[in-house]
Amino acid sequence: MPSDKHRDTAAAILPLVGGPDNVTSIAHCMTRLRIGLRDRSLVDDAALRALPGVLGVVEDDTYQVVLGPGAVARVTPAFEALVAADRRDSPAAPAVAPTMAPTTPVTADVLAARGAALRADRKARNATPVKLALRRIANIFVPLIPALIGCGIIAGLNGLLANAGLLPTVVPALAAIASGFMSLIAVFVGFNTAKEFGGTPVLGGAVAAIIVFPGVAKIDAFGQHLTPGQGGVLGALAAALLAVCVEKWCRTWVPEALDNLVTPTVTVLTAGLATLFGLMFLAGEIAAAIGAFAGWLLHTGGAFAGLVLGGLFLPLVMLGLHQALIPIHTTLIEQSGYTVLLPILAMAGAGQVGAALAVYCRLPRNRSLRTVIKSALPAGFLGVGEPLIYGVSLPLGRPFVTACAGGAAGGAFVGLFNQLGSVFGSTAIGPSGWALFPLLDGRSGMGTTAAIYAGGLAVGYLVGFAATWFFGFTDRMLAELNTDGGKDPATAPPANTPAMA
Image 1 (cartoon, rainbow, N blue to C red):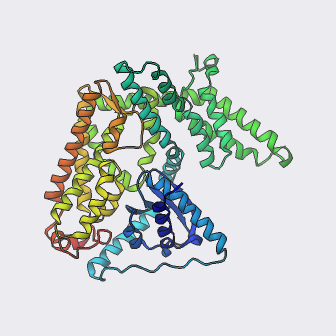
Image 2 (cartoon, one colour):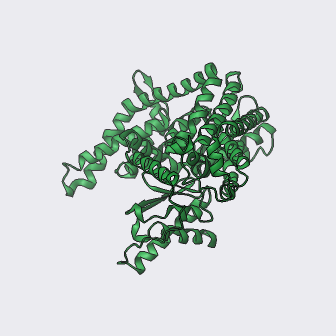
Image 3 (cartoon, rainbow, N blue to C red):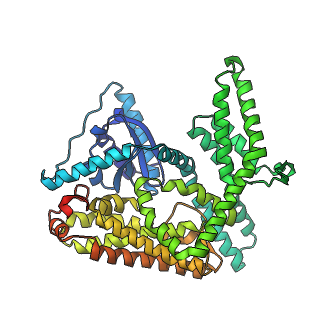
């Protein structure tokens, strides 16, 4: 049950997003409460950002309130209950615009910032088909992350016990607990895929279950025996998508009286045969290619590859597209037990933390911004980067770029050691920063692996700090921001506006 604190947070958020009648949908991911809105103009962004417990706000395909891991899973059900209760009590009550919080004086700089924000908002609304497709794929995998984390940590604990020869009777039990979900993850992917694309979820799960059924080893396809699990989550995704298409096609010609009998049968049979005699083999080849490419990339160009991956990850987070990497991470975990990409991508968060610390030190008289940084840094050290991105670096402009430089340096450090033979990765996805330590696994032992990862974090912190200290501010930015009444970073003009020249 949500605590009083979380119910209070939900109750404070509701009127600031326009009340229950302005809410069309409610969901959450690892860190964000995602709200569908009927009228965006009823939202009071400034008041939301000022709420205790709110780490930031993001506007994408839904309005997203960043609450952090753990908190969001407790605030969301309380928010849902309040919306439902208010609608029962006041079914005809119109949504009332909240009272706007005091704003900064309307200066030329503020107007320029508002213009830049409007342009950015318009750009965000202009979603391309590719971005929408990636977001839908992310929606399939995000609900699986809690199980991936839990099973990954149990797998790591089991490995430590097995290597140390401790509790031999417990090790098999932990292995079963850690491996059970991963052995059936294709079924969950199929279920969520059908649900996301408008099909019957259980039919998507039924078709995807074919992939992990042991009996497929007796079937020949393309001149070879199939292997249970061949194609993994990619095969499950493709199989469930095909099942959705077949199901929708059936509904166009099957009489209603026969729908319950004919549609499920034709869907499972058609998509199942296509899965066995095509999709499993093709998806298996693609998955093998992904694993081989990731290994080749870090073996031959580790430092450079790490620099590029670590430097570009923050922009992906800013756009909300980082979740599209989940199928790749999951494929690598299925193949080798860990994803080598996640520790490198986690360096982007280290660069962000270093940049935020430099902003804190460079603006000693801006109490409001320093307060934001102090409240967001603990989450940043644990790998939750959105509060620092949207509350500090991105609105300021230059510090966002220097944070990317820190991430690139940390990524290059980790990539270099991969290139030298110290290959390691994360046994699950979701956590980052310091929270990733329990999930690390690799060829060189836990001590070496943890030391390399910690070294990467240190490089990210230091380079992010130094780059921001020396290149993160112009003289004019320092003059405007380093005051007791320094502008709220959400309204400060970004670096590419004339005010920052």
